[in-house]
Length: 317
Image (tube, rainbow, N blue to C red; front, side):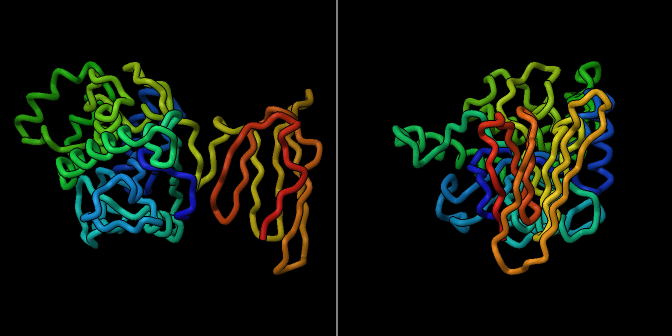
């Protein structure tokens, strides 16, 4: 999974199976509708190119910087941080370990990523010298300042982010329980995006929830990411009406909505018994402008081509 087209600062979205995940999804759906329930947690994709050498990251791996209930425990997902420690708070964890753990759990869990529409960090792009240095310096300052901060357990803080009517209660409650400096997952991501210029300077990061990044935000945050690309899990029907999925090495299933008046969907399946060889599966009579999803080894890529852009074949091992 380390070859995914994810760059530093792209958004990682997660829905776990813990009670906290279901509670956050339920509350988001009550406030923003069904779409807001798809993910309950967000983090920031990090590669070796954005952090100082002393952190000791693998240059070929993708990591996720997040405020999370990590490690062991009834509320945790059993994935340790890069130091091999369990911690409830802001930490850096290997994305491949998170994917492996979720995939082998046997539970219904989801991991996806969203590419930034305009990622300011591109070390290989033209005229990146000063911008690269400035962004890397700023992010390392944020990392040193906030890594290790406690996860915000305070339910009142979560409610004040969701419901504007509750926000006057935030300051007195946080002072009472001494949780003002603790960070919720979406708060950390919003803090970073504000610091690097993707969110306005006036953004109140404590008002941000995970759903604000992929559905329309009631507080008017700019939409800065593309559609979620699913690594684990299946896109919901409301998001992508047409899906092509390679279920196993010898099977291609095409499931597209029928545009005829009867409203029924059509399915075409092509099986081959030949093993250990490259196979080509023809895609025929595909309607234009239908969102397409192709899954290989559990990784789903999506695009919305015109009919002229559709490939004649899909080749896979």
